[in-house]
Amino acid sequence: MTPTIVRARREDAFACAALRLQMDLEAGESNRSGFITEYADHWLAHYDDLPTWLASSADGTALGMVQTSLVHRPPALARPAQPSLNIAVVFVTPSARGQGLAERMLRIVDAWADAHDVARMMLNARPRARRLYERAGFGPPDERHMQRVAPFGLDARRDAERAS
Image (tube, rainbow, N blue to C red; front, side, top):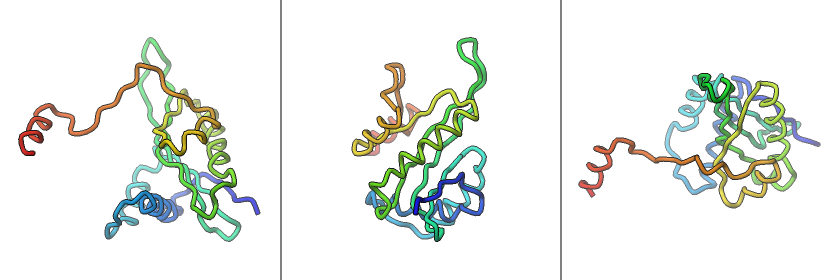
């Protein structure tokens, strides 16, 4: 049977947390006590700004999720005040991989973004997932985009270098 994909509701917080835990453990991260509750509490506190889609089997087993962050920027003369959507998580459980579920979830996110006047979607792609995102219409950003990683303060960076 085809999995159902729906926008996650507040009562899905622990299912989303369990999927995130599974994703992180699969990536080699170490588990920590209380993570499921910590994640669920944070997700619930920021529910409106973290649109999330959950894929489930007929028996209710969570099979995957796409989690995003909705970013609202004020208007500028060069652009309207349209939100952007950062795709933070695309995860499918090992038993459901290879069946097009991630692509289906991304198409549903596309429809939601169109309906909510989103101007742009962005994500950081791991090399093994690039083909999926390219099939879903993602491409490299323009040459203007850069990033910076914490610590942000120059004094903090200097202090960290001195300490090492």
